[in-house]
Length: 110
Image (cartoon, rainbow, N blue to C red; front, side, top):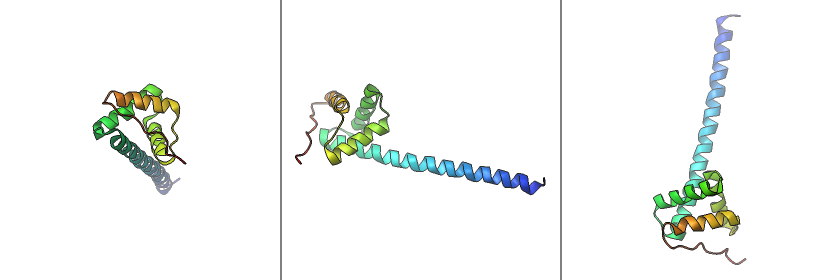
C-alpha cells in the first residue's frame, strides 16, 4: 500500500470525526434553546430572576432524577398543552416556593 492509501484513511477518519462533532454541537444548540425557553417560562410565570429560573430547573432535575434538558422539554410542552407530569409539577412548585411564593397556573380550559 502506498502513502495515498494511508492519507485517504486518515482523511476519512477526520471527516467522520468532524461530522460527529458537528452533530454534537447541533444537539447542544437545540438543548440550550429548550433550556432557555423553559427558564423564560419559569421567569415569566413565577416572577423570579433568570438565575433563579436556572436554579429551579436544576433543583427539579436533581429531585426527580430526570436530566435537566428533559425537565426543560416537559416545561416547554406544558406551556403549549397544559399537561405536566404530576411529579414534575410537585417538584417545580416546591422549588419555586424556595424562591418566593408562586403558584403554577392550572391548564388552560380546552
